[in-house]
Every structure is written in C-alpha cells, then in structure tokens.
Image (cartoon, rainbow over all chains, first blue to last red; front, side, top):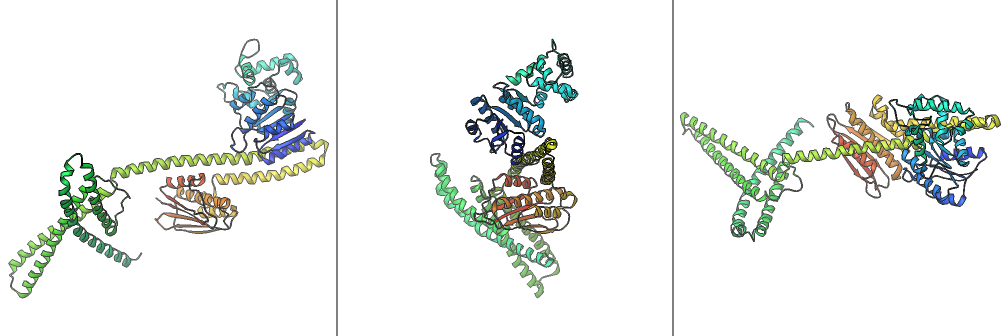
Length: 214
Length: 387
C-alpha cells in the first residue's frame, strides 16, 4: 500500500519508513510536522496516512486536526493516529465520522511491529484499529484499579477484536474459535468487568463501541 | 576590617552626624520664616474654599522645596535611606514640627555653649583661688545637672528629628509589612510557575527524547526479528544498530536525569556539580569558586541552577566564545554567583528561563540582576542570602 507519514521525531520517522519499505509498502511522503500534511495527502493520494498527534509548532493536537481534516476531505484514505497518551476526547474527535478506515493507537504500539503492521492492513481494508488502552479508559472503573488486568490473554484478544466493532461470528473467524467459545469468553469478560447485561450482550460494552463509533 | 579602621569610620560617622545636627539647626529658621511669610499672606486664600486648592498648591510646593533640603540632609549626614516618593499631605506639618524641633535643638546647643563659658569662668576662679570649696561644690552640682539636662534634650531632639523624617519620608511599619506580603505573594507565584515550567520541560525531554528513542529502538529489534528468517545478515545489521541505539538512549536518560536534579549536588557538593556543568557545556567555561564554610542546601541548589541555566542560555543564544563563572561566599555573608559571557547580549530578562531563575532566587530572598546590552557582554549576578 502507499503510505504518508507525519512524525516529528526524525529517528522514529526514519524507522517507520524503513520498516514499511522492508514490508514492501511504499512511503510516498514523510513530514516532521502537520502543516502541509493535508495538502500533500490530497496531492499524493496515499492509501493510509500515519499521523502523530503531538507535533511542532505547538506540540498539542495539530496532528489530530490534520487527521480529522483528511478524513473529511478524503473519505477513501485510511488514517492511523499515534498518540502519546490515551486521550478520550481525541479518540472521540477522530471517530466522530465513523469507525471505518481509522486507527487510534498508542505510540508505543509501533514497537510491536507485527501489531502495527496488522493495524495498518486492517485500516487499509476498511476496518478500524482502536487501542485496547482506549477501551480500558472507557470501561467504567470498578473498585479494581485495572479491570482489564483480570482478563486472560485470550479474553483480552476477544475484547480487542470486539472493540474493533466485529460481530461474534467475525470474532470467531478472526481468532479461529468456535462461536460458543467466543460467547463463553465474552461472558467471562462481562463478568470480570462487572458489565452483566441481558442476552450475553453487555449494554455497557455496546455503549463503549457505540461511543467509539458515535 | 581591622579595629583601627573601624574606629576611624566610627569617628567619621560621628563627625558627620554632628555636622548634620548643626545643619539642621541652621535650616530650621528658614522653615519657620517660610511658614510665617508665606502662610500669613496665603492664609486668607487658604480659608476661602474657592481658592483653597490653588493656595494649598502654592504653599505646598514651596514647603516641598524646603522639605527636600531636609531630606537630603538626612540622607547625606545620617545615611538614612528613604523610598523615592513620599506623601504630599504631611509635608507642611513635617516642615512646621521639624523646624520647631530644629530651633529647639539650636537653643539647647546655645545653652550648652553658654554652660561651657560658665564652666571656663568657674575653672578660672578655681585657678585664681577666688572660689571657696562649698561654692565650688554647689556650682559643680548645679552645672552637672544642667549639663545632663542639656545633653538629654539634645539627644531627644536628634532622635525626634530622625523619627519625624522617618514618618514623613519613610514607609510606615504597616507599609513595610504590606510590601513584604506583596513581595512574598509574587515570589510564591513565581516559584509555582517556575516549577511548572520545569516540569513541562522535563516532560518534553522525556517524551521527545527518551521515549521516541525507545520506541525506535524497539522497532529496530522488531524489524531484526522479522528479517531473522529471511535475511540473517540484515537481521545482524539491524541488531547492531539497535545495540548502538540502546547505548544512546542510556546516555540521553542520564542527561535528562541530571537535568532534573544533579545528584552530585548532594554527594559531592556545589563545586563538583559545577564541574559537571563545565563538562556538558559546549563552551570553554572557567569557574572560580571561593566559598568559605558550608552553605545551606536551598542556596546550593539555587546557585547550581542559576549557573547551569545561564551557561545553557549563553551556549544556545549568545554566540559567546567563553563563559566565566565566579562564586564567592564570605563566611556569614550572602553567596554571590556571577556569570559573564562575551557573547552578543540582548538576553531577555522576561524570557521563561530567566523568569524561572528569578523566581528561584527571589524565593530565597535573593536578588538576580541581568545586564545584557545589545552587542554584549552579558552579566548575570545572583545574590543569595545564607540564612
């Protein structure tokens, strides 16, 4: 796929460009700020734009603003936003236009090369890649300091895919599980997160997802 | 300072004071005459409401001139330090009371002079033998009492003169307290601001430096792992890069930690920590360290940050070729930190770095002076009281 990069750390920008090159993708442009990003994206028409939220000159949210603008102007272009910390409001702003061809990942996820490439592929294919941290933030904190810490790795995977907006069937296909196994895992997740709802679908989790898509 | 010098200075100051008292006696009639000759013709206008403000203005401005002379006399002979401005309404009252007390002082001095003459006559009588023992004793007792009264009056009047001047020119106790509170509020706010600026800076260093580097490092390792099967040579090369990168991250982390708080300050002291600044600074840095005895820790920390911030600024903005730092701390006196560079000057005292330093220094009741004319050189002096 063709990718455009906006990341202020030279080191990381170079690393990303190399990594994508090694994976056979084409980096059509790499920038250290978000100033010309929208214009360049309109001109170069990449498949996906990878944008750091915090960039010069103000080091606040210029990357996010550019990403939102790209989504508005070029709906066919995927956008993957890298964030320093999980900012619920940022995630909400990014996902305001729907959860298609969009990703919101913690910057550190880039270090998990496979995960990052996988997220890119998913976005390119029209899906979403929402960091599990976002879900963690959105799940109402129970008395436990970290509700997600009590999930098994498998349950976590299920929740992750659920947070990407997949149905139970899709989850089963993605994780190579039977449908009943998925339901069992999800029930365990709802139990552990104290989100008991009706019919095995937690209204809270659905609310989380709706919130992400709102 | 040796004892002889101190004695000399004491005599000088006593002579000055005496001259000041005499000058006060001489200026007193001028004040009274002014009040008499200006007050009488203006009196009618002063009473009539329509002309009162104008008449008061005229009367006050004349009085002010005379009062200014008094003020100069106090500062010149008695070393009083008054604020630049003083209230307008007390001027006439001050002139009246002060002239009266000055006149009294003159009278007392005249009486003392008269007493001296009498004492001389008495001594002459004793020498000629015309005075009996009983009479001599009586004269001595009487003279002694009068001398005591005269001196007492003189001291009281000089004290009154000082107090009047303080009341008219100087800030009142209350005013001083209010100023101190203002000063403290300002410096407290500045300290909080400085701490916030510092924290933001640390966050920036961690995020833009260390964290990005670590992410890049992890990415290198990830890439090496991915190409391990396909291209072992490439994988080895990437791992080599990652290894080098890891060393650099470590160095950067050390730097950041040092900038947050140089641990050498606690373990090795100010001089050693400043040596660290010299090593890190890109410019030749000369440090003269002349401190006697131990320093309080807050002073040490503030001095360190003043130097490191000033040196960093010089290296970054001034295009200086060398920086010299001088630290002097006489026992019991304030610690003076002086940083000079030969750069192009024009440092902005309102810049965030220097403002932060000022906050840090004023929190310790110290003073920070920045002299940086365009074209240089820049001199920054911090005086930190060691209480």
